[in-house]
Image 1 (spheres, rainbow, N blue to C red):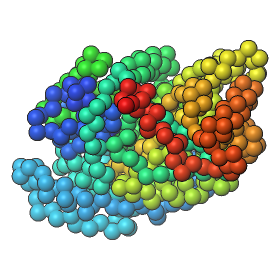
Image 2 (image 1 turned 180 degrees about the vertical axis):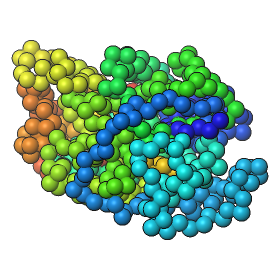
Image 3 (image 1 turned 135 degrees about the horizontal axis):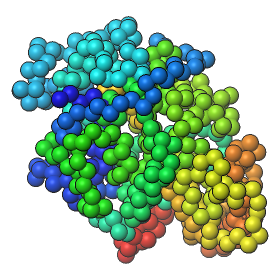
Image 4 (image 1 turned 135 degrees about the vertical axis):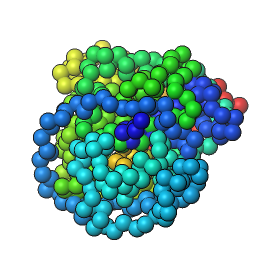
Length: 490
């Protein structure tokens, strides 16, 4: 039966391929050994275990989105048709026959635009010539089968093996995305494929926490709109001869012959958030159409779903004035071959993962508690990646909330000085948005003490002109500290 879910290959293929050891996918002996900490889609991972996906769309009568003042109706991302030709040549003979004498016939810019279906049209209703923004027709998608070679289509390599991985002691890399001068920018860097998705020792507790959040909040953390099915399947892939996903870390099984949405499989197995952005042919702008988001602070998926990029980022200082035009343009043109990464940060009491509007934890931000212990204050980093899917043309954010006690900054060169500079001299509207005031009365004295200590030890120059570190988003000596904390130090 036809599978009409096409946006989750890059993710559960990742996760699920993720665990050659840890998640016992019982891969064929010829399968390459991918790193367990980083999960990635691979050519050998497909979706044949889905007999069908007939779950009804959540909002069939959803009104069209409001028009955007930014018009990119004539802007398309780079076509992936050349890569498609390579993939077709690599298919088994019986599958290649479905393409007949097809030899990657070109589609003009005008043809792609003319054959773009409304973005809320379920994939099962697409006609054969309906075309994605990257120039792939529905007929070609169906002929490709459950899941083709994502690495070849996207031009993004597979991860390298990580033989020393141990889920019980693995720690995330110590991201410190602190910058000075501190301006509101996206600060994008090239994605490191080996580190797209990181597994670490909080895996079991985080997955349980996220499932509990879904049980409590439902569609406020997981939801999808009509037309997002194809993109959600494209972000998900599995071994071609398996019908059950066996997660040996959690000791769970997922029957993939059931009509389960890919986002639910992600929720149960990958402790990261995913947001699917899709192009509306009416204005060329990207809108949030599906997601599983368990790590939001001050908002939730229900408050952002169906909104365009600019409205999603509306509360961010200077976004509309300084970043909206460039970000809409960036989304319109992003190639599948150029995934990026970035980090945002804040200071929190304890480790709040999901804090929707009105959550009692938010009341802690209203006062400076004189009895607050420094040990309760954490740096929260939301480490994010962004990529375009090569078939559907959707853009997928994924991000993970990571918490580090600020007391750890004492032995991290330059970090106390850099963070102190930002807290004391950062632009007023940006710092108000960061909302760090409630912990500054205990953090700043500690940073000042550690700064003096690092100068005395010679770790930091006495007259150092505070600036973004060359090692950003890390710090000098970060790898040695990170390895030692996992027990790998000499």
